[in-house]
Length: 287
Image 1: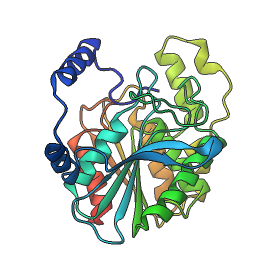
Image 2 (image 1 turned 90 degrees about the vertical axis):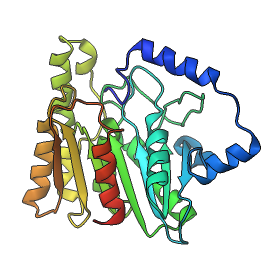
Image 3 (image 1 turned 60 degrees about the vertical axis):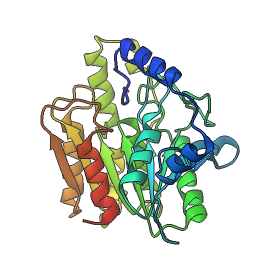
């Protein structure tokens, strides 16, 4: 499924590339200043072993304690271009909030724009890569990141397919996440894939069998004490609000304090929006 900013015009991509090529390499002093401000990764590394080895970029707040808040950002299915916005959002969060280690995590099987590739199978990006193996790999990464950074809390923010993965981790590994944000979630995977089949004029790829786990089917095992915020645009044609609503409603029926935020007139590409950052910030600060 599409992932921010997958639908940007090719002209914009060319413009970005041109601007990047025009920028000179910063000197040591400038690079040190950027690093201190959280503008470039503090680390560019890996987590996990073998089939669960995933690439990440981690950004640190300038001020942090020995027990920071760990924020892990998961991109969507990115069918059209290498995912990068998980790194962008992680950088923004580390810059905006104190005492944060923000990690942009490259999902199993994906390759980013720098050619870094996580182990696993990317699939066709049709809701086929939320499998038990994918969920296990993300959960293992969260466990290792917790051991590495010793956070006071772990907040996970996922967009689109990344939101589905986050919800599946919430259900299958209730000890890994202390708060979660699900943006533009296709939370009922079978019904969402049928929606995409209709939206794309009956493309057969949407009817191929998949092994993905569906958050809606697993919602009964989610720890209802965990703060969960769902954010969706009211004009999202890819993952319409009903898929977030039914998941939120199921949580509400179990007396979860889950929150549903609908963004008027916004579409699918909301992950880098101010509204999403604000909701992640509320989970980070506990306000």
